Every structure is written in structure tokens, then in C-alpha cells.
Length: 449
Image (cartoon, rainbow, N blue to C red; front, top):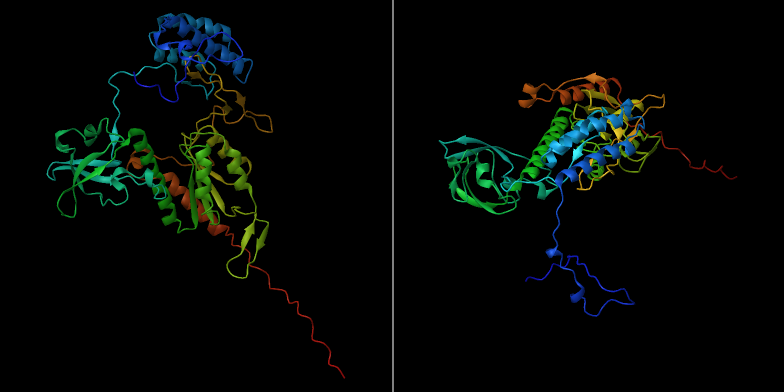
């Protein structure tokens, strides 16, 4: 038999004494020989009941939003006997939880089974159009990523490669791309593994072969998001003539505060700033973001050489617009609400998700799944619950209509740029110039007689 891995955990049974036996091999329990059985329905019944019980004990409102929680259990519990797998149980738990009419309640994970035909898909990080005349699939675009993160670049955009939009992908691992419905069919189970691709340049040069490593479908989705984010920044820089900054936050977690620091400080001294919270998945860094935006310039330094700069360091002195939409959720909504209540800027876009009861995700289940309980309601100083349900309405409603958005138009971003340009023109905020330097020379001494 092969040796056990270094990280393996073993169980030993021996009589209690001052020290362990000199030879532990004889005391080792062969766990591989252990077998046990259980009734899945009894297990599912426990999981269902625990989900109900943990909501009873964790939900922020002890009155359960006026729902008769015991009657809710009795109404749904008989259906557990008709459940045939964990996915169906999750659906039933979701129905149970939905009676509370609260967001931040979700059923995640558990003992879900994957079929034997579970196929992972690879991607080259590009979009293609079938072109039989050219002999393959023409590259329409290669998704961009931040060049400061080389490992995030598309497989066809890695350093040293000269692949461009317009080139034709003729073959993958020797198989013509015209023989399959899409090049992705030749990349099944190929993510993270080298493949040989043949490309014909649009310039007319001879076809050539290169080795690339496809990325996973999840990485491809993130790459597509990167491309969208970079293109938004390019639009703002171009239309705003480098007078307007752009910062997008996908979520509100540890990596997002790092991204905030990376993107905010290069543009904090511009006349306008767009904080894009569209599609924000939430987290818990709103207070850090708001803390930065609340900073005020109350003093200026005048160096001998160079332009004046201010204290508080990193304070934004210009006009702020925050973009929100129906996918702005949780802590993204809290940040947007904070901008409004602290009068830091203008909200533009569409009404947000509406999840204002926060959670810790601490109520796990026996099979490592969870039916999250909303644990902390949020209310305003005037004594009103906020965000939960209605969400946050923007100050200015602008919707991105589906057809125009599909064709590349971003009406919300364009409106934000126009609004900031108007605000900058109406209320310019130049850095105050230093006063005249003081003259501190002593008066000339009186002439001596």
C-alpha cells in the first residue's frame, strides 16, 4: 500500500497511562473498515427542523415578523417525507423561510451530489464568430484585464503573444474548430492544462501554432467583468478629460477595500468622482469607505516646489456621484444610504435590492449547509427601519435599457459624467492659492553718526 499523506489523521486506542505505547501501530484503528448506515429522510428531517429552530433563535425579530412560527413548521414538516434529495430539501427550507418576507435568507451548500458527467469547461477568454470562409472562428474580442495583474490576463493575451481581434482560430489540439459547434467544445476538461492552438493572423501572415493554458469558466466570467470595469474607466477618463475619477466596487470584502485603496488614491484629487456600486454583492466595509469620503480638507501645505496639497490626506474635495442599480445589495446599499444621509453626494441609477437585515452566517447545519438567518435589523436615528424591503431609491432615476445596453450603451454612466460636468462648471473647487509670503527681514539699522 502507498504511504499515508503527511496531512492524514489517524485514530489510536490504548489504555490510559503515563505515556503512549512505544509502538502505536498495534493501537491504530482501521477507519477504512468502518461502515455505518443512516436513513436520509431522518437526516433531512433533522436538517429541516434545525433550520426552523435556528431561525427561531437567530432571527432579529423575536416575534418573527408576526408569523406563527410553530404553525409554519407544522404546515411544512409533513412534506419532508416526500423529499428525494438534498436539493429538494433546500427548496422546502426556502419555502419555510420565505414566510418571514426577509432578505439575507438563503439556503446554501449541504450534501449536494454531483453527477458522474460533471464536465468542467475551459475558456480562452475571448469571443468568436464562426467564419467558414476564413477556415475557423474569427476572434471578435479578447477580454482585457488590469495589466498590473498579469495572471488575470486572458490566455490569448499573455505577455509575449501577439494574438489580436480579427485573427482566426483554426484548430485546437489538431482538431479543426469548424468540426464543432463552438471552440469551447474542444476545451472541455482542459482548464489549467496546456493546449495547442493554430491561429491565422488577420494581417495575412502564415498561420502559426502556440501553446496556451485555458482558464476555468468561473475565471472567464471574472475576466469578462474585468473587461467591463476597465471599459467604464476608459469612458470616464475620455469623456471627463481626466477631471473625473472612477472607482468600481464589486463587493465589500477584504479584497475590495484593497481595490478601493488602489483605485481611489490615484484620483482623489480630481474635480469629480464616480463611485460605481452597481452589481455590488455586499460585505462589511461601508464604514471604511464612508470614512474616507467624509474627510475634509481643512489645511494646506505650500512646499517650496510643486503644487499645494492638503490635510486631511486623501480627502476628496470635489463632487461625488454614486451609481446604484437593482443588483446593488446588502453593504453596497448601506454605503449608498450613508452617502445620502451624510450628504456626501448624489445617487443615480435605479432602486436597489432591499436587503437591510444583516447576518453572520453562523447558523450552520449538520451537513455543512446553511439556511442563513437575518440577524441584525438596521434603523435610522429617527426610528425607522431602513433599506429592508424598499431598498434605496436614487436621487436621479436613470435606467439602462436592455437593447441599448446589449449594444454597448451605458446610459447611467453617461448621465453621471454629464451631471458631474455640470456640477464642476457651476461649483468649481480649485485649490486655494497660498497667500503672499511674509516679509520678515529686519528693518535696516539706522545710520550711525
